[in-house]
Length: 243
Image (cartoon, rainbow, N blue to C red):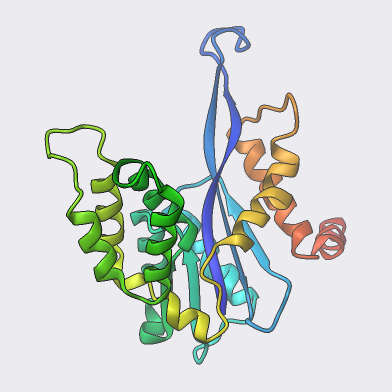
């Protein structure tokens, strides 16, 4: 089972508190959490989405995996950003799979941190330096990357510290960077599927020009969008017409 979870910002409007709620309204961006899952030999994902917290989205994550065919004997391969809420949601929802559930930090998120660090470490030959670190990561030589970063970490009193940030991010998830193992098994190391899902499931409708949503309506629209993406549209309306 290949799966992932990630957030996407959508435009939200909060009404004012006076009699005329149009006055004093606030426009802001809030995160919609999208998850997907598919069997390794399938090309179609099952999707779930919610405006709720990542912790609550974890419940949808497990439901989506079940809908994609997850059983007790399955192996689970998750690819996502290594942020604490996402990692915790995965650990909670797939704890029963123990050694058969593996969380892999999205290779391109790691590269974003390394790219920022490269501006400080090797401004004159950033592409070459970055390519070298990528090669080490793909060979699971994480300790070597950490050692290189450590020798260039900024002073503790320096507020802008991209090298230290990259070192902290990689070190915290060093047990979740088995890129060599994933590639050997033909498994993805990037979260391209969930990123694609953001575009055609969420953003194509919720980020149309001029649209601002109250949270409740955004939540309803997310459920409709995932129902459609899961090819469950006709069944949904058939069931609704019976009630």
